[in-house]
Amino acid sequence: MKQFSITIAGGGSTFTPGIILMLLENLDRFPIKEIKLYDNDEERQGTVAGGCRILLKERAPQIKFVETIDPEEAFSNIDFVMAHIRVGKYAMREKDEKIPLKYGVVGQETCGPGGIAYGMRSIGPVIELVDYMEKYSPDAWFLNYSNPAAIVAEATRLLRPNSKILNICDMPIGIEELMAASIGLSSRKEMEVKYFGLNHFGWWFDIRDKEGNDLMPKIREHVSKHGYVTVDESKQHSDASWNSTFAKAKDVQALDPTTVPNTYLKYYFYPDYVVEQSNPDYTRANEVMDGREKLVFSECQKIIDNQTAEGTELEIDEHASYIVDLARAIAYNSKERMLLIVENNGAISNFEPTAMVEVPCIVGSQGPEPLVMGEIPRFQKGLMEQQVAVEKLVVEAWAEKSYQKLWQALTLSKIVPSAKVAKDLLDDLYEANKVYWPELS
Ligand SMILES: NC(=O)c1ccc[n+]([C@@H]2O[C@H](COP(=O)([O-])OP(=O)(O)OC[C@H]3O[C@@H](n4cnc5c(N)ncnc54)[C@H](O)[C@@H]3O)[C@@H](O)[C@H]2O)c1
Ligand SMILES: O=P(O)(O)OC[C@H]1O[C@H](O[C@H]2[C@H](O)[C@@H](O)[C@@H](O)O[C@@H]2CO)[C@H](O)[C@@H](O)[C@@H]1O
Ligand SMILES: [Mn+2]
Image (cartoon, rainbow, N blue to C red; front, side, top):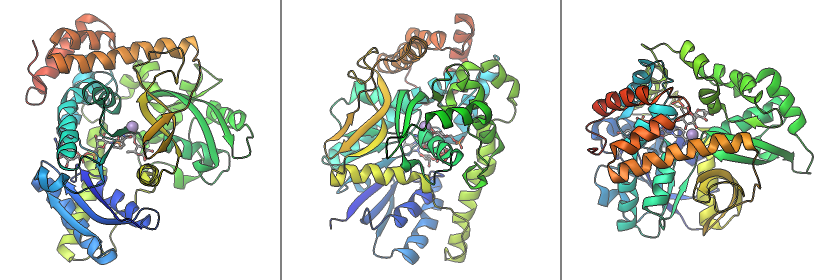
């Protein structure tokens, strides 16, 4: 059985150890002969790589492990790139979240002005990684979950239309696990879903079990009462702010009780509530820096100090097994049914054909084939047309170095109150991002 070589781009990511542990758990389904970590921050990656090297030596010594900042070494002779970079790291995520709050606007990692600023930072480096892969391993596939996935996906559509790239998000996967738990199923994989939207901006409208029984009535009822909060504590997020988001899905669903929503819609439906709940001095970025980032880096350092991974608190990222499902679908033509962010081309029949939409796809060795979700209701169509125009304007602003188009994108965003606030935000974010964004004119 072929053994695969993979490069994790963004090797210093807080998710790298959990994903490596998940890959080790799935070696029977997806055999690996080499794992390379690639990052542009040698020191940051060095700590994660140091811990992972010892862990792999103890648990899978047969796997060759490489850490590098050299693109040729990183991207040569590989089958897959798993890309999870964060351009500007948490320091810039903190600015993405705090600068909008100065103007009474939602500050969020991937939504609104924060997501737009993050997108302007991410487009260039993600395209650069794709180009490295194509230069050094032209037959490889690029599995991207670097955020903001909506803007990155639109950029790869426009700027690298023929590249072998799959854009994916784990939010629907996390929510489906909560749905399954709320109706007594043991896994989301017992469900077959129909979903439409943009990334972080979508709705489930049909969910059935493998026998075709309609599960929506029970799921809709649960969400209308409890959001995605379940009594199964093992399924709940470790952070209170996430559990508050899962609970808020109750109010988000109220806008269309015939569907169940992606949790991210709360930022667009209830921006006033979100701003009221926000602490301008301590946002989600601070929570993660004090939480996940501290835990992962201290655990990796402990492994290095002790020269063993015995007893580590590093946890497997179980739900990241979607990455293996995706790689297997390409490698073995498995025809896996998965939500991916793909060019619409009629999957949503009354929506912009070139929009990058999040819909169920059948994935095989030639890539994704979107399933037809049909016509969407006027309410969602209106919301998505505004949002996709924002995302397209951001990519055009980056490609054309256009201040005007970026101002239009911010003004068009549902959660920015006026062109004046949009311009103030733009100038503030531009100053904060001057080493990352292209020079605009
Ligand atoms: N698609 C999804 O649903 C999903 C889910 C979880 C996380 N993510 C994304 O995964 C990414 C990683 O998240 P994290 O919290 O671990 O971030 P992190 O900051 O801990 O790690 C990201 C790494 O990327 C590196 N990096 C930045 N720019 C780079 C470049 N140009 N080339 C190579 N490496 C570069 C950084 O140095 C850092 O080590 C983020 O974009 C995050 O939003 C996406
Ligand atoms: O605030 P963070 O950094 O903890 O999470 C931001 C990411 O949130 C989503 O990913 C979630 C996932 O959906 C959830 O089920 C759980 O497993 O945690 C993940 C990461 O924390 C979202 O899909 C990503 O795009 C965000 O970056
Ligand atoms: Mn996501």
